[in-house]
Image (cartoon, rainbow, N blue to C red; front, top):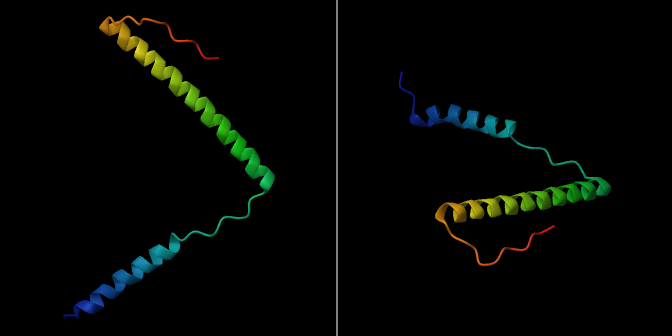
Length: 81
């Protein structure tokens, strides 16, 4: 029995629709302003620490490169606190 191509596509479309509905997200619940401010402060502190760590690692890489290549720096950079 040969079915028209149209009827062969219908089950695939139904499966795709069901999968799409299964993955649909519900809207996020309302956020408490105090908790949001606290989370924002924590994220800012984490970003600051991450930036400091990145800066330190970049400085170490530069110093190692200079040491391996035999490059001497004219002035020592000022240390950051």
